[in-house]
Image 1 (cartoon, rainbow over the protein chains, first blue to last red):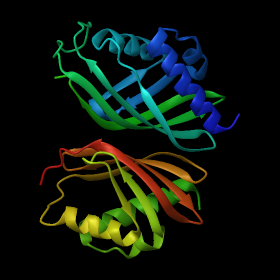
Image 2 (tube, chains in turn purple, red):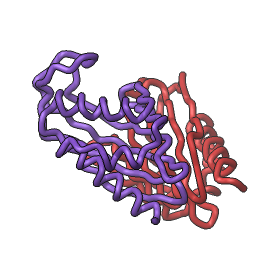
Image 3 (cartoon, helix red, strand yellow):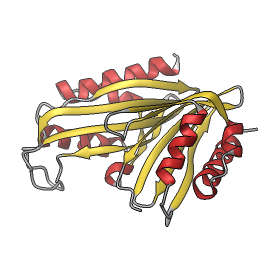
Length: 133
Length: 116
């Protein structure tokens, strides 16, 4: 499988997780100890379960939100995506999150992912997030 | 030269350009037709060509004192590398693609709360 094909599987798996709540495909693509460095919100997500809970929290916070990923480039075990999210308001109470703002959440972020043994082991992102405060 | 060594040369070249106004190293590392996709600007901006990149750095550096200027290598493989960039109050993720020993394309996004 090429790195672009892997990236496209990841995009499909993210859609499944966000739209249908089915995390099976995403779990198969991520190492259990995956680490995501989210520079835009100064957070790290450590581990597959934490990533799953983060997505669940996002779906509760902004019902109907969905990711729109675009493949940019890739080589070897690295691939880069652009993520855009919009069209949903921050209305849901989520433990550990700030109180709902009733504002539209918009995200524009650049990502780079690193694979090891066919699984995502690390990812970095940065960009803009609005509507959370 | 490894991709990490190349990325470190890019970091040195950016420092020279931003902090000293010396673009020689950067010119040697960039394809003349390099394209940068700058997502944090509204509207989305493409900087096309080394000369345009040079002018963009000149304009954005004008009158600014860099109290924080940190580039950090994150990862790289083959012809692809990623850097974390912190300039004053702003922080960015940069991904660069190399062809024939030159940066030919780059993508950048981050927050733009860059202070003077």
